[in-house]
Image (cartoon, rainbow, N blue to C red):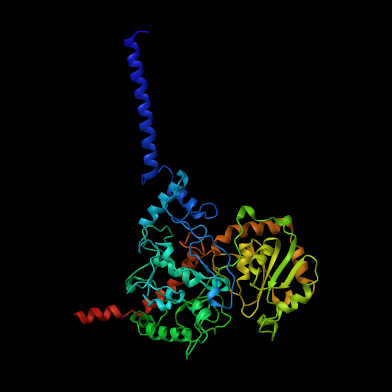
Length: 506
């Protein structure tokens, strides 16, 4: 072949090679950065919302989470890092995660007061009401820690303190709502002007205040907990935001049943986030205005693919906890139910019903026991609810709820009968009733409930940053569903106000 014929062939080969390279490069560029992506936005949303299959890893190396144990000495109580498993970050290494990260970045950029479902005004209370209770001391005139730097976020005390830590997670979420490096749902966003807000949030760590500061220490004549409540009432009720609607558009978290004991009646017109209504009069707390939030479970969540099926769970019924409760005056109160059931079930061979606490190896033992049981009892005690229900959900153990007065989180959107068994207290204490009921549930029925449990478990996970459909996100959505009634009251109250202003201006 002549040299003249070889040159055009080589040129053509190089031209094709370069063209193919440029075509591939341009396709990748368009795929990654174009707002008109080849994959519809709905597909991206499906990937992001399915938190059971996609989790984002944080920028920083988070601390290994250990299940903490309660100690009578506060100084020995372990703390837990706020960065939870599944915490989100916009940066990923492989290409599929980069696509999801790119979508999240776009969503974050578009998340403003007009896009968010809920606009929240948060009072800049002094640190003594919130992170100061965790020992945090910022710089002069610094109200909040820098939540974009996980190492600067004060950890929360471990043990049973954790189960009522709801105000901690909600506050962190609001603080992060304007942080550029945070990927979180565009559900609630903090606004600085209260007139632009749907609700006003009071960031008082009331459960922590009760747990850690309700006892007199040293020469104190009034506990820190009582002092903080007194100061809070004086401050909040003096604000124009409170006076505008008598506090009906204010949000206060009082998840521990003994928190806000001194202030709850004076601030009772506000919306409360509670564990249940067991220790509240109906005029102070009720389902019409208030929110029920899940406890933060203390056992480790079982990964979906490691959850034992029916035939790998040898124990039929599991309960471990306090059996003799303070209130044992009547069956309806719940105080006597555990004791009655103990005597009925304690000798059954496939039943684990024993006294237990979180001390020693208690939490780990409970987690292992629930994970190897088909049904887990959630029995009323001193109050209608307990974190035992949410420990069972995290363990994919079908909860059996025996608590006639219980209120359940997000029940307006979740059908608990799909993954729980509800039993009246009067039936549960009839000899043979409970075991006959549970033994009569067939494999396919149990498996259907078990699969549903694995689908909804994400709704009961507290984490930072929050993720679509997790506990923080679900609580904000539940609050947003109350806003329409608040807005109605607000509009009715100012019916004639604007007209009067027009008259006066003329």
